[in-house]
Length: 407
Image 1 (cartoon, one colour):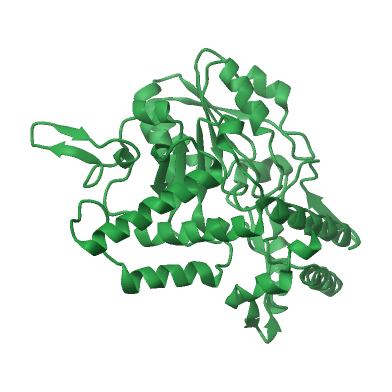
Image 2 (cartoon, rainbow, N blue to C red; image 1 turned 90 degrees about the vertical axis):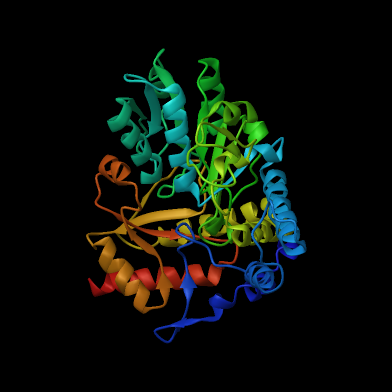
């Protein structure tokens, strides 16, 4: 693996990693919140602004056609990356959050009435809780919650018991942004399907870290954000099986999502354009495609293996710190470590690590119900990306030890 994964070479692609913070080299361990961008992504975007910028679709002129080709080629890149059947199943959105809002809104309108139920898990990000709560207040739907054990693993037997004839949707994270737990989504999906219920998978934290094949998972819907996978902010994806997307009403109205408009009647465009009202972020989709090309060229299997090695090393090293408590010890775990040390407040730990040039996240990580389940207010979270190193982990551990001594 080592010879295939040249970390020094890779780090050169990310100029920000050479920055200093408070006179110390930046140690960026907040990849779960957003990843840094390689030159290849930023260059492709500025190149398009400088040489191909024109509004896509419907334009007869050369630049518009060229921009449209790039935009639609990006859709094909996404299709290939997640192994979808057709580009009709790839809807561009502003990110995971908008993708979930789109689905909750359109699916709720078409298929859910008062008393119908959606199953979520206790470890969901707020973006996979609040849209369903908004639907609950509008439509009177009921939210059921899959519990977990103390290691941060979902209780599958309890999950099965949540189903009833009122269950209309299961919406669950592929990987927890706090615990790092890799949920057995394939198993969850198979059971839901045996009950005739579709499943939405929140892939925000899985797409950057492991190969994903939506057909193999048999997910009905799969959502993710570009900025978590080394791409630009403000662009994301809703994958949906074509037969589902066909049946859903549009989420927003405007240009681009229509076939014909009169004041009497409007007919909607075919997939995927039915869900893409307004001018799309066609520069962002180019950036996203370049980012997916970038990780594909390194190999998702290589990235996964390298990050697993890093996470195992970090876990081992952090456990040497006295008073260390790691939250989330599932067998199947991604490259996220949430921890607390003794009685040190997570915010104090994060603030003092920052003075040492170490960027971690602190707080509830947009997963307050999970914090309640864990019985904590928040955690310190170190999350790793493909460019992090063992040396950086050593700096993190030394930093944590230094802060601990201060208290």
